[in-house]
Amino acid sequence: MSNLDRQPALSVCGGRGFVVAEPVRELLSPRTVQLGESTQVRRLLPNLGRRMVGAWAFVDHYGPDDIADEPGMQVAPHPHMGLQTVSWLHEGEVLHRDSLGSLQTVRPRELGLMTSGRAISHSEETPKSHSRFLHGAQLWVALPDAHRNVEPHFQHHAELPHVTASGFDATVILGELDGAVSPGSTYTPIVGADVNLTAGAEPRLPLNPDFEYAVLSMSGEAQVDEVPLLPGSMLYLGCGRTELPLRATSDAALMLLGGEPFEEEIVMWWNFIGRSNDDIAQARSDWMNGDRFGEVKGYDGPPIPAPELPGVPLKPRGRVR
Image (cartoon, rainbow, N blue to C red; front, side, top):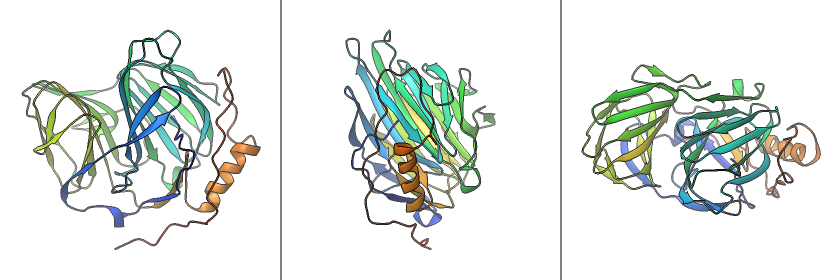
């Protein structure tokens, strides 16, 4: 998914100086962003108060939208570098095309994982014949410096491992949870899980105290560490936890996001993650003027032009200790 903001700000993210090294309960409010003509998303990361959670650098929640008589998601070809995109649906379908020639319809509870590496472009669209509702999340994972120029590739996993208990079922999207390991490729210690609760369930999720965590509410009403969490909001939890108490006041769905705090500071702008302003400026130039990002074939429409890049150079700040 693209960041379609036509005036995106250069953001410095990452570095352990931004990590809370103890358990906290920090409620993050979303920012509404228009995505194409008919889809609005709630952007949770990057957030004014929180830039990353582990390697998770971007989180959008959208829907549930009634698109019975609408085109749904229509995101024209656009570039990415230095990151992975994670497509996760609760309802609906998204057709993925990319410059490698991948063509894949992603359906609910299936993992669509695109590793951009040095450069890739892709489009995302609701198929012409589609379900009535569209509901899901789109997330980015920052690639560490050692892997940010890997060859781009796309993975689709229709079957993923589960962790289950009374009133509780968690699908492991990325990384590992309670011994269940996702087949999706990862480049940093990380976890992403889709958690479904039945009304009245009170499980305690096992956590890694070295990870920082956040929980995104997808639907229903639940309490996370005694904090009520409504759909479209996210609770940042910090580090140092060995377990997380949950309580569902109705049937509810949550996404657990976590990982080892990201050591490096990164520069994020539009659909690019780099390490300097020069990285970003070169990527923008290559998208507008070169063939580095390839061509998405089969999409009915032109690619998205890059916004203007702010003229003031931005370099990562020294870490705050």
